[in-house]
Length: 298
Ligand code: G1P
Image 1: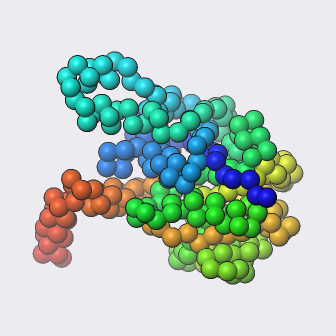
Image 2: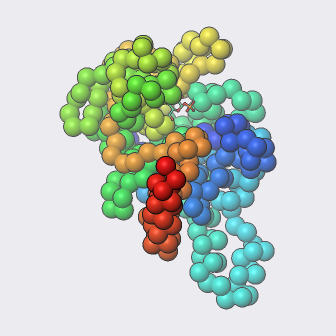
C-alpha cells in the first residue's frame, strides 16, 4: 500500500538575485502577488491538496518568513481593541495554515542538498516538494497542481514530477524529459536532463518545480555524481530514478507563472488582480484604457 502524502518540503534558501536590489533586504519569497507573499500561494496549494506538515528550508535573511507564519501579538491586540475584526482575521489567517517547520541551509549548496536536510522531518514518509518560483493557479474546486501529482504517485507508487509543454526558446530554462505517454496526462520518464540547449532537447516537455518523492530519494541523491560545477543536481538524482524505470511525469492542469522572472511575476500580479473580487472591475477598466492608449501610440 502506498502511504498517503501529508508532508511537503519547500526549498527557500536562494538569494533571489534576479530581483536585486529589492532582495538585498526582502527575501524573494515575501514579494507579493497582489496582497499575499508568493510563498503563501505555495503553502495554500499544499494545504488544499491535503498536506498538513510543511518544512521550509531557509537560509540567511529569511527570518521574515518565520515571522510571517507566526502570531503577531502586538498588532493583534491593537486590532482587537479597535474592533477591526476583518483585519484581525486576516492577520491571524497565516498563523494556522499548517504545521510549519524550519531548517536552515547554512551554505548555498543547491536544491538537492536542501532536500537532504529534510530527512529527519520526513522519516520514511513520502513527501511533496514545491519550488517557490513556480506559482500555479487552478480555479476553485479544481484539484491543485501538487494534488494532481499526489494522485499520480498514489496510483503508481512511483515518484512523480510535474510536466509542462514549453516552446523551443524556453527549453534551456528547465529540466527536459524523454518519455512515453502512459495513460491520460501521465508519462513514464525514461530520461531527464537539466536545462539543455534547445538543439539537445529530448522533447518539448519540461519539468517544473513540483515533485512527489519517497524516502529512497535520500540514498539516490547521495549516490548522484556532482555536475561540472560541483553541485549535485536534483534533476540528476531524478535521472537515476528514471534509469530504473521509477519516475513518472504528470501533465498538470493549471496556469503556471515563473514568479522568479520579472515579466511573469508582473503578469501574475495582473492576472491575480483580475481574479480578485474587489479589484477586478477597476483593473479591467484600467487595462482596457491603457491598451487603447498604447494602441494609439503605435
Ligand atoms: C529548477 C530546477 C529545474 C526546473 C525549474 C522549474 O531550476 O532545477 O529542473 O525545471 O526549477 O522552475 P531553477 O529555475 O531554480 O534554476
